[in-house]
Length: 94
Image (cartoon, rainbow, N blue to C red; front, side, top):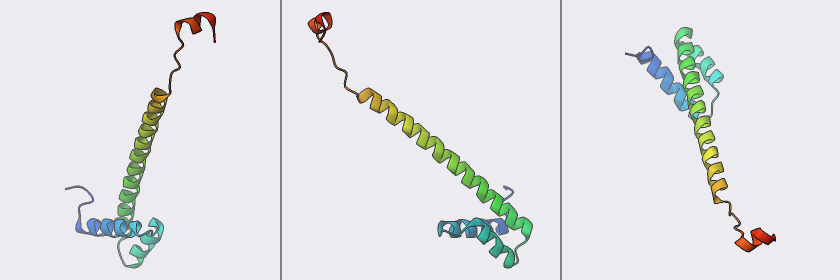
């Protein structure tokens, strides 16, 4: 069992995830949960888990975007037409 698999943690994480998707700010949701009587330690743990997951997700998105950008650069470089000059053009210029 992971440290955030308690029923309270699951409830808090589900609540936070659902409301973050709706556009609410994490700090605002934290205050609401504290006002609803949840223990500060439980709320702070759930917020920390969400922040860590968000950080990992953002790092993964950044890596994927960087990889896609590099792949696009390679494709663009490869697709540039190469002008071939014939023997006489190279020999006499032009």
